[in-house]
Image (cartoon, rainbow, N blue to C red; front, side):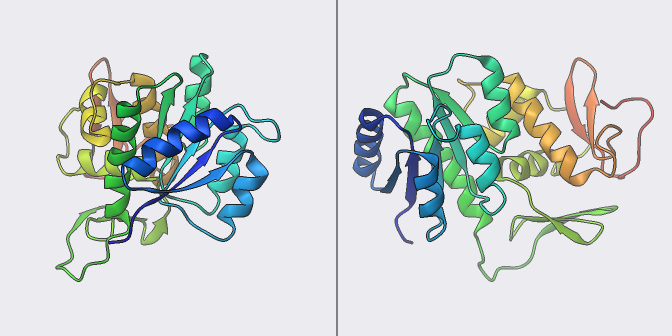
Length: 241
């Protein structure tokens, strides 16, 4: 298996040098971009395995850049930023970010986050000729071998974290999961649990698989408890949101 390539997009040369040193030490190949235009130029010729993306940059902010590159890039994006505003975290995840960590960060935590995101991303690229395994529900099909999803027999593009959340719930239909349980299983890390992170990804997932995200058929909100997967694919009048 080839070594993983990580693109670091940050306008601070000191941060670039620091992060690059940690990543190289862990055995990753690193590409560097000091601004959005440079990142887009690199992405036109190469697809890294993961992108580390700053929010505050001079030519285009990271959230706008994320929205831009998500049109053709579906591998993990990890936001690393010094902005303290909680709304930036929500915007970053809504733009298609898979994870979020604030500066100053613990290098060990950064590496753990990267490895966790890459581990799931590797499953998305799996193409081994093993026996096909899938989860089948009315109007929804999840291929566990290829990590792909179809809604009414039409493929839908999902981010890595969204697929992870869907599989966790779909493997145990009707079980109620607290958002912390979902975070623990999908992010493989409970120390940095964020209810808002789970909520944003659930919202993103509903937009992709639900005929009407405002009245979900599959991912049901259970008041004050969490979420559960409805295997019947029909609207439930008693509990949604």
